[in-house]
Length: 310
Picture (cartoon, one colour):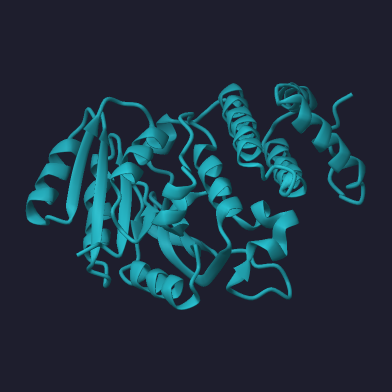
């Protein structure tokens, strides 16, 4: 029987958290699932933990590869996914028990391509949740909504992380939607493609994912500004190329520019100066630079300072 949901979990040196992650998936109230774990060249005991769990439950499939990063690992899992729907989970995070059942039922009942839920921020130092974050739904809009109705701001309605979104597998496979191979914003590249190719999205205003914050993995993988700039460049440059190839860039041009603006402002709020912003914007395709400048020209009512290419 075909699984209802495929859960794709990239694994790299997360032994302290992996058992809790896997246990949260195995304890789901939705039982018709497959769990695809991609061991991305781990050098700690993560591989042994995966082997132990897979022996206990045949729903767990373990794939092994040399270390290539989370994006390529997830892509390998997508190729093996046989579920009607799929979702990704980071191997240091974990799901609430009823998550997959609620999201699957919502997708089926509302005939949606995407279902988005909220998440908890779990402080690993205090071992407790410290905040909950719910999906953003514009005023006067209800769930589900058609992508065509919010086209000009649709990318800003997505957090840009895949682990709170359930996708129809056929949507991902038919449109060949994949994660980036770079280390920053590679999941946004995937999510925004899925958003553009979807027709209907449902929101569940309940936190179902526990996003682990302040763990050892994050502390050792802090990226510098150069790496962040490189990742953002790869995301927006490749997204532009994909949209052009699919013939949908013009349709989403305003939403693309708005998402680029918000991404730049996020980095400014977190320390980028004008020189870094200009260098980043100058590295983008010329057509994107022009469309971004046109967008800013009509966006002067924004209170925050914006940086425009000269």
